[in-house]
Image 1 (cartoon, rainbow, N blue to C red):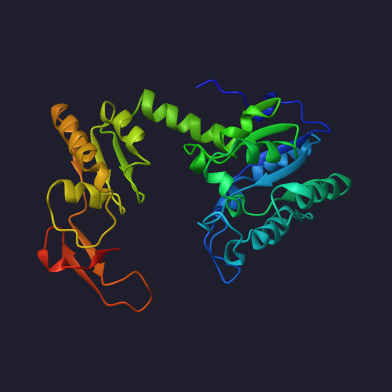
Image 2: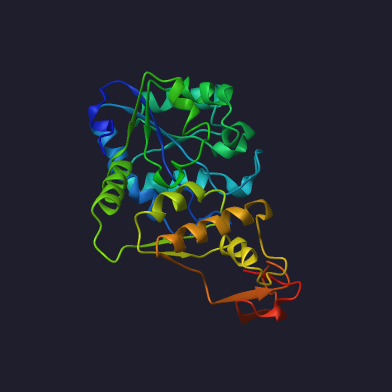
Length: 296
């Protein structure tokens, strides 16, 4: 997989917009796991060592297109500063004057700035070109180091690349692509893929691509309920994409035609509602006692 790398960019004195994945577990301003922050350090340090001003951008949670203090990236800036051992300027917004001021401050100082949550703007998830252009105005170069978000057609991932002179993969992205390429092109057998997540629609392309490559596919998470319902199993009020039931059946039929097995969970935890303190029960999948409860 030959991709333009950050190593191919002229970074000296450049403003490098680096899309990272800092979607960390955060509660009451406390980060539960900083693995994703640490995973981006090689790219950040490489850019700094080669003379760039680093402009970091990420989403956090699902704030639904408007500012929500619960999903602010400010605690992430603090943690990143501790790990890097250098000041990280935090921008109170990801576009406009606050962002531009923060970038100028970083250029005059330690050359690292973290923008506020991209999803505080509805334009991020809508892949809005005006929002993407405003992000691109902050930088000279674009680097994508957010493998976990790379499949999304969001403004900071896709549209922004139309407004920068050069776009490249970061070191983490490069590493993940290398692993993925090895797995897909010359895997050891048996080759088993595990997929999860909330929506089948987000994974359709990946599933269809994997069908001809893997020996077995394990599907978990909330997306399994769409497959359960497509098999006419009781799912109560569990999350189901009703418009993807036929797609789920087509996937299972295509797998069977290839002699490949799709494995789904055999049991699940059910509850009346998704909230702390709700009574739960473990049931076998297909047990009608789920009633109007939902799978967690």
